[in-house]
Amino acid sequence: MLAGCVSNLSLQPVRHPIQAVTVLERRVVVVVYAGAMALDITGPIEVFDTANRLLGPSGTPYRTEFVSADAPLVRMSSGVVVEASPLEAGQGPIDTLLVPGGWSLNSALGNQALVSWIGSAAARSRRVASVCGGSFLLAEAGLLDGRRATTHWAYSEAMACRYPDVTVDAEPIFVWDGPFVTSAGVSTGIDMALALVEADHGSALALETARFLVLFLKRHGGQSQYSAVLDAQLADHPPIRAAQEWILENLENPLPVAEIARQANMSQRNFARVFRREVGTTPGQYVERTRIARARELLETTDLTISQIAGRCGFAATETFFRSFGRTLGLTPKEYRHRFQVISPSGLIDRHHEREGSLA
Image (cartoon, rainbow, N blue to C red; front, side):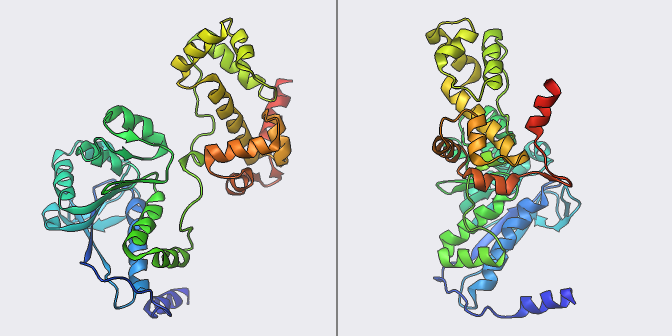
């Protein structure tokens, strides 16, 4: 019954199709390779397909093609098989070249024929888009040199190290620099595709597409809301490491730099210089980041009020906490809790209390 309903729904015309300005055919060429992640591919193309159905007969649709060095049948990391044409079938002008990421990315990066083809195809494309680790393939082809780009938060440091001529920004959901659009981890390819539809056909169609797919047209916040909470490692330098540990144990208190420097038995000026060298940030920035990390943990695992969490994390006022949290994550504490709060069968777990109790 459900299958029949879905089939009938797909055949029904849109009640109020959104008109778009007629342009040349929007040819989308998707580069696939063995071990790529299926959602990196299916997410964006479902956006384009939905936009096509909402355009109506007078709109200019997207036409999607799949090409691969592993043609004709290419197995994704999840086992899904994509039917693709050889790379040679991707000749001619391209509107959007789409490059996914995947668990087999290292193997793809070592395929010089594939990397070279991406570089030459980009020269024939109006724009080039990547999802997740696909940005590594664009960078490997030299397409992102001197440009800003993003990738999955877990691999941003590796990308910055491997491609020093690329300005890697780990925070945005996607980055648009000239004709190149790089998106972050996996599902952000959908956000990027919605942005492409908006650029091509206007916000009305993009919004209607997002509504039909039950998505936000523009997702709030950046990648940091999904990354590991305690992202700062302790320094190797013993005095700085001791200061970091002291900070973690005293977050609920005011933490002036002079007092932190005393814990390291260093002058304030020398401490600030060495701390920045060892940790990569100032002591004040590190304290704020650590307070936010602790707040995220409490929001996820306890039912403490926002004001209680602010106090436990050392924010002098709830308003200060709100400003710092929003500046760091692009979300309010309440929005963050709604997305990430952990619930067990017996209710919320205060893991922070459990740890404190085990140390008593």
